[in-house]
Length: 301
Image (cartoon, rainbow, N blue to C red; front, side, top):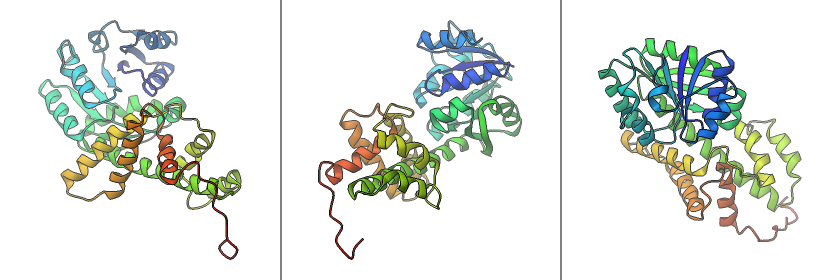
């Protein structure tokens, strides 16, 4: 299939690479030309303009925020001006459900199919081709999207109409952020009290506390490796989407609110570009990172 791919970031580039490896004709566009050239070396076709990427049966967008997706589709020289009726647009970005619903309605007016298909799994999942993909859209569009997305998916689910994928992704980001924060709290406790941390992680990963976050993020937290696989700034954006969705649904999400404030503290300290595993720093600072380990009193061990 001829596929336009727009947005070759940390996750977009390996996703597009998997499509090339699978034999699709990928027309790649990105503001940073170096990433386009790197993908072209694998066999992708470099797009000089957005219009070039729109000359395809399907177009995938993988962009930072709602305004970026709207600009690519409807801005000056946007894709809508060149895409043919029947073209499928698949948005793998994580953006506002309200914006997604609006995009779907506007594309429908131009007889363009649309699936919102945000992905989860981070850079590791994108590189390995094992992402979780939550899809919103009509049955016919979903069936066509699955043919494309299956190349880099470990699991896919049709979760409802257009914008449902974004709502499920909001829930996903709530769970991920909460899990990271709790892993940070647990590690801070283990380190402060002198426990054999590697042995502790081994047994924790073998019980009910086991999670993908514990497995992947805990070692990086211990190594103080906060090179961005998924930036705090982006997770903050996602949490704000989740809080807005909860407000719309009239439900209380107090834990999500607290974690969002921890993320805000790190961003205010200039650390928004670090990986979301850096949440452990906020926990440590609240606890007095330089304080000595508390003694274990006899009878309280």
